[in-house]
Length: 189
Image (cartoon, rainbow, N blue to C red; front, side, top):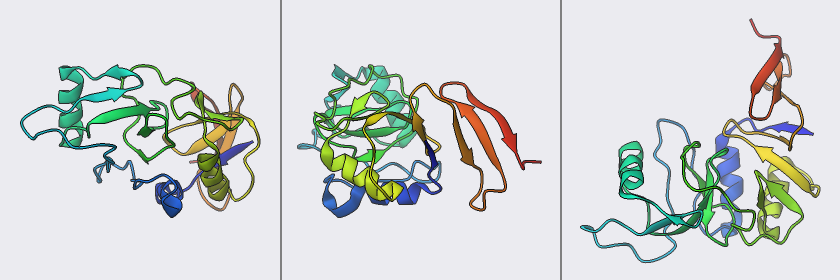
């Protein structure tokens, strides 16, 4: 099974559905700054916030890199972050929003969201509330299993080929391998 999610707006809206997640989703486009929810009180303006990502406090260099990339320091708090997709959320909670993928923070733990569902995305076990959001997103039930989800909106079973559409009328598409990328395409000039 592979799914191509065509718009980030749909993903962000689904993640923010009914305040299940308690924070706003955002588009990871280069034109928009990510919206970072605050899980606790803000740090004084003169002090760097205490930010823990995947169980490890960010260094001064990581905070500065974040500030340069996003134009602001991250919200203080204890967060999990998925470097493959850019999804993040408060430690022990479901996905809250997107930021750019590829940050080199500590590895994502399977229990980062205190998941209780038999569904894993990029190694993170999902809480049932988040599985419900994914079910709304894909238009049907999410089967138990281990999936990968990338920053382009592609989803597939771990360690398997995927295929998807470049456009909505299915006249152009691709075949890809997780971690490798596109290995073939059709209908593309």
